[in-house]
Image (tube, rainbow, N blue to C red; front, side, top):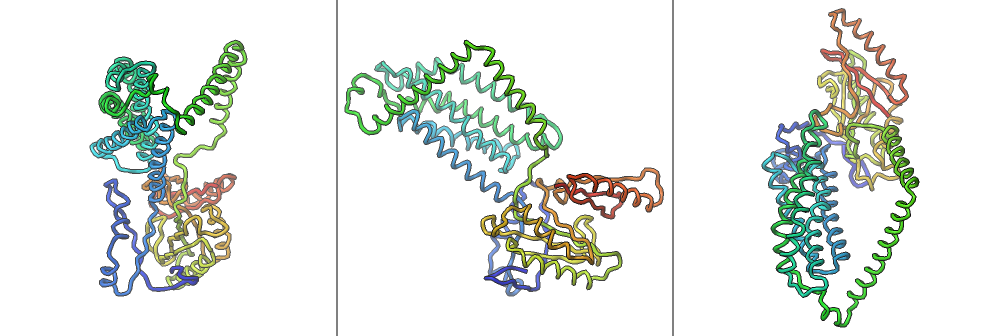
Length: 457
C-alpha cells in the first residue's frame, strides 16, 4: 500500500526481510537494492516497484558528513580571520585533509567502518588537528615579527622552540583517549572505535606538525612584519585587520583584568568553583540516563495478536482495518503488512500479523513532525481495534540489540513446574510493571523461556 499523487494505491506485493551478514557493512544491501536497474526488476516480475524501508543510520551518517564539511569550512574561516594571511590559512587547510585521509587508512587496517561514531570522532578531530598546524604557523610568525628573517629561517628557529611542546601535548591527548578503547562490554564496543579514531587523528596531526607543516611554512610564508612592509599604503584588508586586532586586544585586556580581580579575591573565585562543582554533581544525578539515545529514523513497526485459534481470514480482515487507520495519518508514507507472522517471537501462526510503517521526511509530515508524537496519535486511533491486541514500537537504536527499542526481561522457572505456574507468575510480574509510571505497557510473548517486554515513556 503506497501513497501516490493524493490517493492510496492497494496492490499485490511480496514483502521480504533481509538480514545482512556480520561484516560491518549493514548499509550495502539496501544501497545495492536501491541501485538495482529498474529494467531488470520489471523484466523479472513484470510491472513492479521496489520500496526499501531501511532502519539504518543513513540519514544520521549523511548529517555527520555534512557536519564534517561545515566544520572544515568554519575552521578555514576562523584561521583566516585570526591569522589574517591567506598563505598562512592554506597550511592548516592542507594539514587537516592529510590527517583525515591518513586516519581513514588506519581505520581500514583496524577493520573499522565509516559509521556515526567514527565520523563524529573525525568532526572533533578537525578542531584538534588544526591546532597543531596553527601552533607552528603562529610560532613562525612570532619569530618573523620585528625581524627580517625569511620564512625558512623563521621556521627553523620556531621548530627548535616548539618541537618538545608538540610532542608532549600529543602524548597527553593520546593518553586520554587510548585507554578508553580498553573498555569492555557494550560501552567498550562503542567507545573503542571513537577513541581509536580520535587518537589516530591526533598522532597523525603531530607527525604533520613536525614534518609537513614546517615544510609548507618554509615554502609559503613570507615576512610581512618588517618595517618596510608597514610603511606601505594600507588596503581595506589591512584596515580591517587593524580594527579586529584592536578589538581583540581590548577584550583580552578585559579578561586579564577580570583574572586579576579574582586573584585578589580568592574567596570569590573558590566559591565560584565550588558552585560549578555542585551544579555539575546535581546535573549528573538529575539528568535521565540511557544507553544510546533514540533518533528519528522515520520507521516504525506494529504487531497484531489475535485470540488463539483465530483463522488467517479473520486476521487479514483486522489487518486491513489497521491499514485503513494508517491511511488517515498524514505523516505515513508507506505501509507494508504481513499476516501469519509474529515478529516479537519470530514465529508464524494464523493469529498474528505485523507491519512496517515508513514515515515521510520530517518536514513533510504535516503539523505533527516528531516521531514519538506521531506514534501517540497512531496508538490512539488503533485503540478502536477490539478484536486483537495491536502494539506499535520503533526499531532499536543499535542494530542487533533486541527486536524493538524496549527493555526486555527473561523469567525462568528453575524448578521444572507446570507451565501454567510460570504463566501465572509472568502475569503477576506484568501487573507489577504496569504500576510503574514510566512504563507505558508491558507484554509477554510465548517462547521456551518466558520473557516479557517493557515499553517505557
